[in-house]
Image (tube, rainbow, N blue to C red; front, side):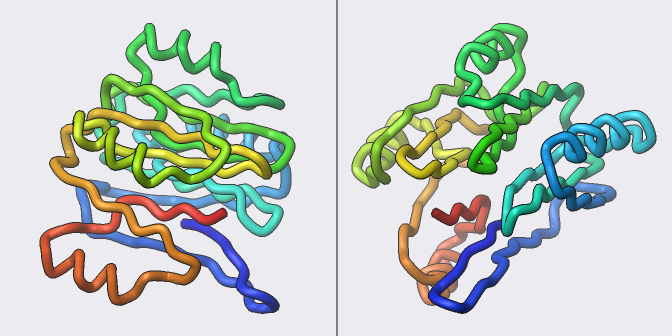
Length: 195
């Protein structure tokens, strides 16, 4: 799920898929404190649900919780800055980044155990670099999360048991024709990012 604008037009982009999830819920919150409370409430009152997607769009936090993710545990980092050291500490405990978003003032990073992704690392780049992304993929390091701040790209690469090939389209408009072509060649949409 992502939100963008083109001149005066504003729109949401949402990808829905049939998969192994057995239940799903979503919550929309106005600020980080409300988001934190919503996460805590979900963990207490919705057993088996884990955060499967998180986004900050149109001045609101959007949280999607899913059942049947395969996750066995989950932790959420909320920070005023990109929480590099917290992420590295959680990697030592076998958590992996499964979702992250930036509001302009707050970072929220979701890390999970039981994910299909392993051996993660991240890069901070001044601009989108397609060549570097393709070089990573040659070593089976696939782009699994990306967040754009006003001056940086934060890119997370992972080995992923669910991905055996990846192709990325970087365009100014929704790439309808490219998506149709990829579907015909066996690719499925797995992530959308907007900057």
